[in-house]
Image 1: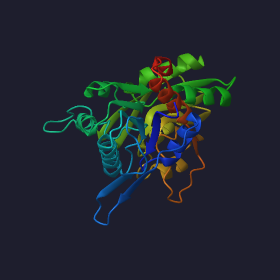
Image 2: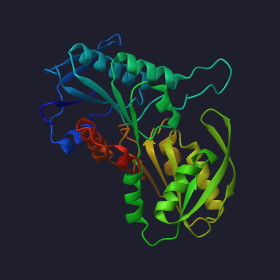
Image 3: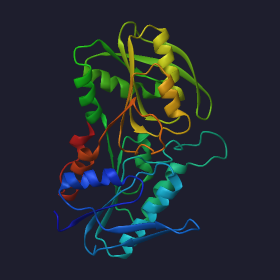
Image 4: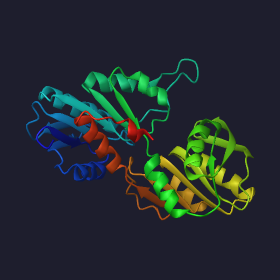
Length: 314
């Protein structure tokens, strides 16, 4: 395996790439990814990759466009260096929320990004918790959409063992996800009816389910500005929840997210390292980060050895 496989990383999440390589017992590939003063990106692969199976670890998180261009240029460089196969490992797939025409004369940007990745030379894509599962169909190459659920569930079982908990979906669209967690934790389910009044703006209407004197765990696929999350926490508190926690696969945490979380009644927010926490000096004491490195490393190993990946989907 060590002779054929190479793992490279862009600048979006080098720490996760290092952890993945440690799990695979291989060194991180040598590549220089630089940005010129005018903003152009330059990539130089520092080792022979001819005939190798390449895996590129790159989340297309903020700065989204820079990280996406890095991924495309790295793939182009590897393809021109005669790599045998190129797998784009994208722990967080940016533009996933633009998966349909939500209004007249608007783009389906997640489809555009899928076309760009395929054209740049990807033979396969591995990602974690796509915002919308149908994005897999936007690609004409294999896509493995892994779930961070096993990593998050293990932590929840250890933390809340024996407590009366309720899984809460912050909107109707996430009910299926919350139900799956509730089934595995053997607890009840609640849903918050949320109405959006604009982009990144949400208004909580009412709660469906019983949360009184229970530990309420809000579950979502991502936390962006935390408006939905903190409004949901307020609704749960007003309905008598004893403690409130939250978990999500992707901590986008843009704009006022951290301040909102710190000012809320939420005790802990659980996210994965699919997106690195920004080093901006903010107080992340309420944030706990779990790693998906082992999950992604196992997926890479199975793909490389032509084994089944489906058991990682549960």
